[in-house]
Image (tube, rainbow, N blue to C red; front, side):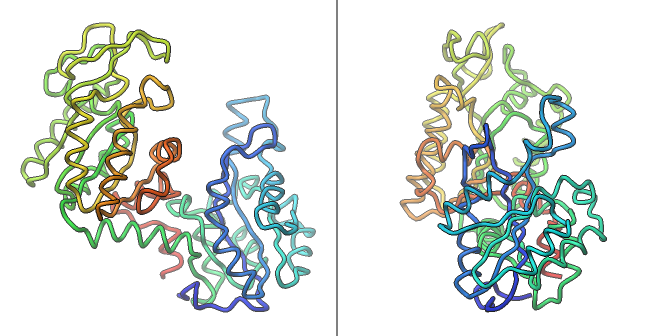
Length: 403
């Protein structure tokens, strides 16, 4: 395996797997965070005197079109990304309408030093998600060196993220800067942990976070649980939660997690109170209530002030922080206070010397919304990939390069 920074791309054509799966509305990219995250890798190759063939997926064309019949393949084209990237790089970015067409091969072969080509959506081919070896081989023929810089898809054994690496020598396959940074940040939290280590786990469902909580019980000193998933824990303990979100089939799981934490000496922090509403609506009537006594017909949509204060105290006394998942429905202004309180506390702890890693789509969106992206140690681009990393799973996109 080569170290990306030490590799000279002079005269080489690099095939780079990026994660340009960005939101596009009416041809306009509404959040270019993932594109900007790939720029250091792209610029290093170009500055060395190399050329680049970029490849990515965008959405799930077949599944999304089945759900929304008004969508067409054109809605999943990476053409707008090519235009936006050209603006960011301040240079022309060529585009191939089809990832493995003869036209794409010719454009790749003819690339000169400093030139960039973006292939169209890899998921136009079902072979991509199936991890098809022949499809991977066709893609591999586009470059002389393979660089994986797509952490967001590292947990998928897809053709372009894992299988493709088999077509390159060990010295000609490597991680880009983004992947290196993601792996280093994750390993620092998991394996070079300074304690107290607080994991903040939010989101809607216990079922989505069982494995990460179980794995963190081996590492963390404190686990803060907020968001919709917290009400399953309260109901499991006999609390009244009104019409709050609850997974009734996970009540035993919640009880078992609390017991396991107690046995391991890990402190689980549940929110004492909630901001409650009479309907799931930003215009709802709101009040506050203890989480063991939410009135019938009311639902918890954010953590309350008591929870904010106690959680902030734990976070500010931490040396290592992992944050995955919001504390409430922060997209609605009335229910964003709890998540913002957590962001404030994480930023304050970071300023005092703690190492903080924020990951998962909603947590990242919250950090960006409140303007804290530069006030935490690392913001991960990976949602599912980061979760699986902290669940202790081997990620195919990482294994393919390291093996």
